[in-house]
Length: 404
Image 1: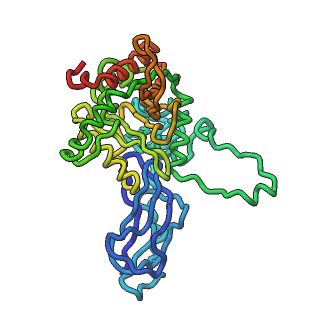
Image 2: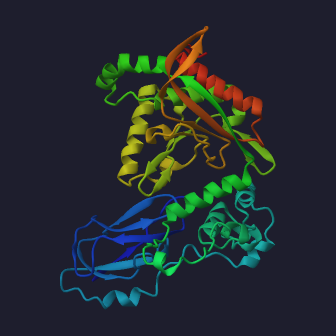
Image 3: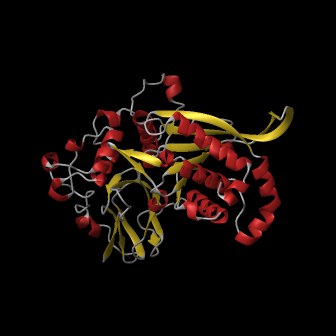
């Protein structure tokens, strides 16, 4: 008796994955729930556990293959004598990623919904060329995202993939060519889409970090003892950003077709760099959390990101993003929007600089702040005012307590 190993449901709108690597080879003994194979999707990396104990009889999907949800990856035999030929009969049964009705049905469909229109506007994918799986052949959000991921889009989606001129032979032998992971391909596409779609602009300010650093130095030991997590800067920045977003709601909004969608909630994305690329887990309803709860959430995301355990649900629903290039030593940068959001705040390294205060030159720990925003929805006045609000709050943290 054999047990099939199939691609599990990968999450909302994710219809396919690439085989990253197998942890076992045919003939190896496996335990139930032991990680067997790593799958790379366009959002996260997931491990598929063994559905049963036994011996890995056959690997059908090889490293680098693209597979759909439900596709057959391999099989497990019951014991060391399991025949490898048995699962071969099941091989023709791989499930394609949710087969859809004929394209003609989608083309004949009427309105596909605002989400489809937004994705079409951002990606350049024409819904009339996408097979619809919705009622009466309508194209759904999942159909659009699947078409983009599968490269079934028109020229605008394929534009970033350019073939370069070959290297001279003496250089070519010293090069290494590695296929981009699904995650890296998605990062590249989304960043370029953000540049192509939004009227992106960046404005700058600087902030005197003396007050926050003093507060942190005074209470960090007691904070860690009580809450079991370190007191960093992200809790202060998240609270300062939320206060500014409440004053400038356009920065927390997005464009959906011909509509402006104002978000009356504050899901703050925190950009985290990993070995496999940039991911942005989301602290949901951050306005309802204390500084300690925010720090705990961010620390938890950091651990999950390092261990490759972030789930798709961890990275959905963000309304605004904070990215901290300062941890890598960046002095100043112009962050790229995390579409469809309308704003992203860049933090940078803190360094002592001479500044003039009341006619005196003093040395203060200063940090440059950068707000990149979508000028289609956020005016320059609003962007500058937003940064001033963040600056004022960080330079006088008592404002957070007094809700000023």
